[in-house]
Each structure stands twice: as C-alpha cells, then as structure tokens.
Image 1 (tube, helix red, strand yellow):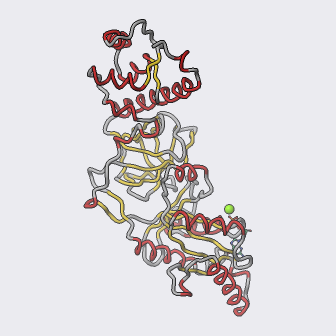
Image 2 (tube, protein in one colour; image 1 turned 180 degrees about the vertical axis):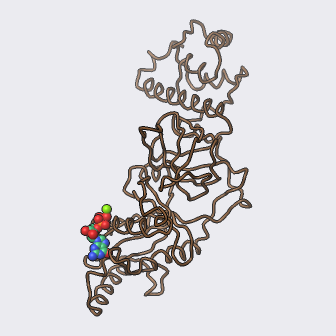
Image 3 (cartoon, helix red, strand yellow; image 1 turned 135 degrees about the horizontal axis):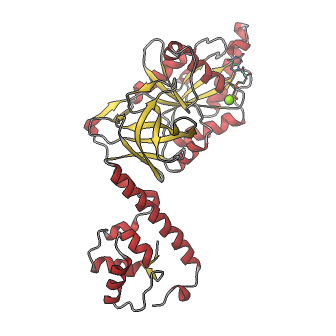
Length: 383
Ligand code: GDP
Ligand code: MG
C-alpha cells in the first residue's frame, strides 16, 4: 500500500494512536488527526526515526503473504518418501466417476469397513499386489483446485487421463492434454469401457485407434518407446483395474516423491473441502503437504485457526496422526475455512491470533489504499 491513515498505522504498529500522533508532531506534522493520510515515504521515515516493533520491511507485507514466517525452507536431510497424489481427468461420460467408485469400494481398507465411505474430497487406497498407498483426489473439477493452481500450487503428482475406447479423444480430452502438458504433471492413460467390445480383433483395432490418436497429440506412449503407460480397463467388470493401480505405483516410484517429515518439521497443507457439521461444528478436509499432524496442533488458515480436536479418515475412523499425502477431516476450527486455502502450523494459539490480526490489518490497509488511490491526491493530503 502506498497510503495509510494514522489510525490504521497505529493498529499495524500495535501502538496507541496518541503516541503515534505525538511522534508525528515531533517530525513536523501539525494538525494530525486519526484519519490523517500518510504516504509510504512518510511511513518509512517514521519507522526509521522511532523504534516501533515492526521492521520497515513489514510494510511490503501483503495479506497474501502475511503467514510466510510460518513456512520454513525444506531441509533435504529430512525428506522422506510419500505416497503419490493422483487426480483423474477426461471427457464427460468417459468413466471418471465409475473408476473412482470402483477404487473406493474395492480398496482393502474399504472392504474392512463394508465398502461405506464418506465423501471428504479425497480417499486413500492400498494397491492389491504391492501394498502401496495412493491418495486420490476425487473432485478435480472443484473450484478449490483452480484456486490452488492460481497460487502456483500444483498439489497433484500424477494425472490419470481417462479415454473411452468407443469415443477415443474428445474435446475435453484435448483440454486435459493441454493442462497436463502445461502443468508438467506425470501421466498414465486409462482406456476405459473395454468390456463394451467383446470381439478380440475389434477390441485390438479400437485400442490401436486410441493409441494413434494419442501419438498424434504428442503423447509419448510406451508403444513408440516413450514412457507414458497406457492401460486398457473396465471399471464395470474390474478388468485390469489392478494393473492401473500398479502402473501408478511404478510411475510414482520412479518419481521418488518425498516430503519433509521429522519431529521438528512444521505442518503445511491445503484445504480440500470445508463444511459445518450439525453435531461437531466446523470441519475441514486437509491434504498434508509436509510434517506430521497430531491432535492438539495449532493450525492457521485464512482468517481463522484451529487447535486440532480430532482427525478422521474417509471411513469416519479416528486417526492419531496424518503424514504427508494423507487426507484427514479436522475438527476444532474456530470458524469455517475456505477450500483452496493453505494451512500452516503455528507454535502457539497466541502466535496464531497475532498473525490473524496482522493479516486482517493488512487487508484493511489494502482496502483503504485502493480507496485512497481513487481520490484526488490534493484532497487526500493536507501536507
Ligand atoms: P464421467 O462423466 O467421466 O464421470 O463418467 P461416468 O463414470 O459417470 O460414466 C458414464 C457412463 O459410462 C455411466 O453410465 C457408466 O456406467 C458407464 N461406464 C463407465 N465406465 C464403464 C466401463 O468400464 N464399462 C462400461 N460398460 N460402462 C462404463
Ligand atoms: Mg463424473
């Protein structure tokens, strides 16, 4: 912001307005009032002249980076392997939802719970052969993902591109391909609905057609010596679904996905979904990016915070901890958080409250700055 009122500055500096006005008078500002507007240069002068408990550099703070002090650079020595995070994309009706439903229900963990899961925006499966975990985000078209992408956060590791054997590449498939190339995400192609073509030769012919269409769209599939795996599946009969899961595991092993995770790593994550639940209050589904989340941890997001009261997985089962790539529903938020917002750990509740107040003050300043910018400078200034 380039302009700020005396009262807002006092608020930001965490000092009494009277004290600030007295200092201003000493600097030669006569007739200052609480709504007197100061330019950035004057604010810098005041900060230089007097020891307010805010470094001048804080003035370059914006509400968008108000919580940056809670983030720490990654320590390569503390990196540990983590499961892949996968989203499914493709043309409408090509079978995305059917695949997600199949994976969710066939998962070993789901079967232990009678196949009943709650929609929390993501779910975890354990692969049948290699017993590895995969996290699927089941709402890829969700506004939260667009918001995260806008902020430069690409939380997905692998995209499964779904193409119906009957239709091959369609307009939304092309859009997905464009997105995959731009985002740099790794790719596995699933050719779906193979059960629809029972004659072997016809099926082979149709598969070849899809593969050629992929090649024509510069997808470097294994058939031509590339590294993109193509798996023909049926989410209806379950044919080759295990192969699809293992293809994802194979790819993620090659990607060597890691996150910092040690007792001293502070937790960072993203809100996937949030809602108010009648009996328990505000809940948020959070994807853990780094660190291990435990009950009692203080988390900050948007304009609110949380002392983690409990965590549950998609089966409604209590979790004692949540590690990188895991998704849990968290109870204990003071108010509702926004999907797509970042989640950061604060050491104490006091720190969380202080930072939230600071961000709120910055938001006010930004609002005021755009307002003042619109005014004629002459009327805004009495200097
Ligand atoms: P979405 O729009 O991509 O989520 O597609 P859906 O999963 O809703 O599937 C669209 C239609 O195709 C539904 O009627 C599904 O039952 C059907 N479908 C999806 N996958 C398969 C499959 O592997 N085989 C067959 N025969 N039908 C499928
Ligand atoms: Mg669908």
